[in-house]
Length: 143
Image (cartoon, rainbow, N blue to C red):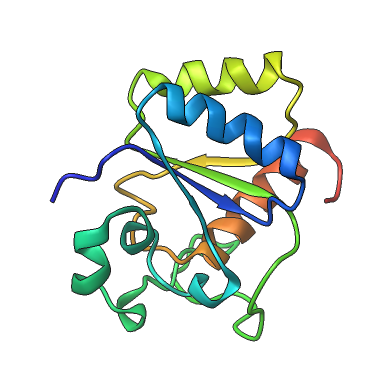
């Protein structure tokens, strides 16, 4: 199963910001998908790959990793989040181009991640919690 380049967007309500991301992606043959809250419990690979969507139902999502490095769902009652998040999937060398474009266009998205072998079966909620925690540790700022 080969995932085609795609950028997953979460909570991009600012039309100008969404347009700037979409413009770069259109110029570089990258698909863009806005992920709705109803999809937050699906594995990331199912959101990124149309074929995988049928192979990996929501129930097969990984429980992720907690603060202690243990597997298990954190905040199992959490069903959504409000912050913007951008997930880059299979961009290869175009990832650096996208990040440079975002800087040049002054598009600030604190929560960014790449789809990896390690996180492909995580849900959007699990990825959100992990990169939010990392962002807060690196910057010392709460989102």
